[in-house]
Length: 88
Image: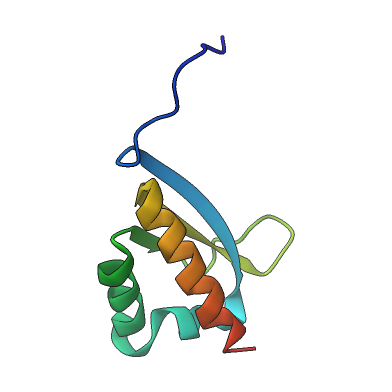
């Protein structure tokens, strides 16, 4: 049931899931979650990290869920990519 529709406006809420290696979750969260809070306020997206025992099946990757306006989600994804590339 795919309906032809115009693309949603930029303010439309979107959600994407990123697989982040468990070893990098610490860098993403920061001390007491400070880095994560900064990322959320800078990007405007909501960022949720899966529980310690919640992995992408068959991997040791945690699931990081970004949600919010399309632009905010894209910003957050780029910021997380940069952050993780600095923390090999």
